[in-house]
Amino acid sequence: MRIYLPGMIKPELIPARHRPGPAFVGIHSNDGWEYVQAIVQLLPEEEQALFTFRQAPRLEISYEGNGGGMIRAVAADAKNLLGLSPTLICEDEFGHWHPEKGMQLHAALETSAGKRQAKTIIISTSASDDSHPLSQLMDSPPPHSFIIECRAPLGMPADDLDGIKAANPGSEYGIGPSLQWLQEQARVAIQRGGQALTGFRLYSLNQRISDVGRLSGWRAGRGRVPQGCL
Image (tube, rainbow, N blue to C red; front, side):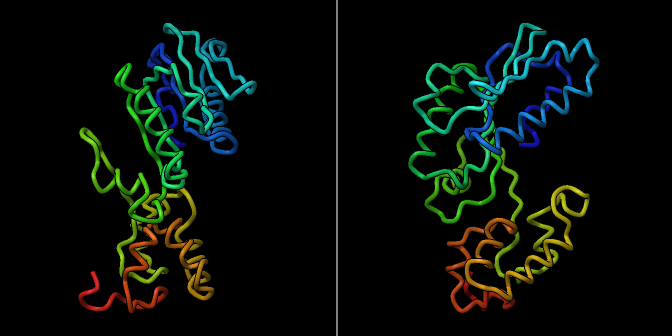
């Protein structure tokens, strides 16, 4: 969400097209709406006057300059996406969309993207297993894809600092949770084990749970991967 619409910093760069935001309502869309609002407030007053922020019937931001433009948060329902012609699509936490309904939604957005050769940005923590549509996209990316993946290597203890840094590269620069906090949470998860440790590996180390589960004989908290398990 934090790259929801970087072009808003320079309003003259906003094309006159609809731009549906992440296919989530609630907190995700609210974050994007408030983020853009905060950026607009840094602009000169005459530029701010060209923006209109709406909260009903849906979260929407329109811009009257340079031919007009719009950012819209869309509901997670493929049937509601007919007729869109975006230039930019942001899909937030795609790895945790429902596999069937989420893929229908993604397909609908992908179809709408073809009208104006829109770019699609998918921002997500890892899906839990190989069968999820996000995992399939990562393992067999479509043409012209560019992937940045930040994931702790398998085989490292959950509280290994190098692994935490690999999965959270912004933390040592003040972006996101601190390395100290993450390491403390890892140690708590190790002590608790079970779902606590599984959840930490998924959400904080960006590891697929199915990959972790395949490492037979590995003590999930502290042990190293036995020779030949990978």
